[in-house]
Image (cartoon, rainbow, N blue to C red):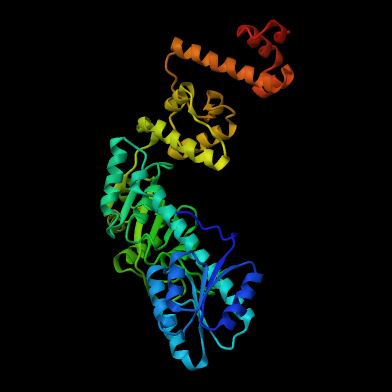
Amino acid sequence: MHLQDYTLTRRLLIVDDEEGIRTMIGDLFTEDGWQVDQEEEGKKGLKAALSADYDLVILDVSLPGTSGLEILQSLKEQKPDVPVLMITGYASMKNAIEALKLGAYDYITKPFDLHEVQKIAEHAVERTRLIHENRYLKDQLFERYGFDNIIGLTPSVQQAYVLATRVADSNASVLVLGETGTGKEYLARAIHYQSPRADKPFVKVSCAALPETLLESELFGHEKGSFTGATARRIGRFETADGGTLFLDEVGDIPQPLQVKLLRVLQEKKFERVGSSETIAVDVRVISATNRDLKKALTEKSFREDLYYRLNVITAQLPPLRERRDDIPRLVEHFICKYNKETSKSVEGISPEAMAMLHRYPWPGNIRELENCIERAVILCQHRMILPQHVLLSEDVSVPIPSPDRRDMRALKEVEKEHIVHILASCDFNQSKAAAILGIDRKTLRSKIREYQLGTEIAS
């Protein structure tokens, strides 16, 4: 599905048996840049509306033969998104109300103000644009978070997502466990967008980011004056997520006093805003995630056991990236495609030497760190392939380097030689500039030029 380009000429169909009205409205919209078509008979008008894409249909209620209401009903059954503006007389207001019930956008009564018609038309077109845009964005979300888009052949990853497909249609609470950056939020969104709640909100709350008072207000809302700084009523995330899914990220960091209130919402689906005695009922599915050891927290009495079992109806465990290294090539390919689109680059892949670096690295930041790494590499890459010099890894992490292999060493030297030649050429063989870009001094650069036999005249 693609978003319609609303900057193109807009099309109007006028269906009215009075030539004077058709001409008056048609001239106004033509002057405003619209393409205008006219029909005087209802059946011909319906045929025209169904055979072409119109941004607006202006339809008279009182037509000879087939009535405007019958035309409206048939049109809305087959093209429900087309906005229809009905024309009616004062004597047929009952028909105008019936038209609204059948799906008309609005109605105008004779005699009418042409500028008012113009204003209503603009509102109708904008509303349709927003409907199409919202539908497009939802389709994109459904596609992005489809289970068939999951990257991972590691059994533990497959197991987590198979479990997610089985529970998506239910209302069961899901607890997602895993280190930071392993994709816990992605899994939560996939469950939501493949569930019957997909058309309703997905609302995220980071439980570790806020102090207790603010977190309570964030979750449940507050009334004006309920505490210092509460200058207006605030709707909490539970109310916002009504009908949809609430994702509690880092749920293990919720303070104990709030754990009691959270438990009640899960049990009774009811709560009160801070500073209010009014009980609010909500229908919310809760998916929570944490990188903490909640079983240890139970032993230490820092997390309520009854809340743990309410949250943990279904458990999904996501492994760290270092335990699923076979998935790295597929993830890299996915991120290269993603950032090619975002940066208008055309990087075709990654060299074996650069991939070997990614395989050796322990990835303390997991998939999130890998994505950041590939994003930087795509930006820095000036070749068809991502090379080792484009892969910037944290120097603070000790990387286990296997014993050197002669084939690897020769390959790395070839990569270095190619890079030096490229930098020299881009600087018109100005050694001072090239050395600065390479991060070495001029003496070292001259030594490399001689080592790789790039020409005695260049090394001089």
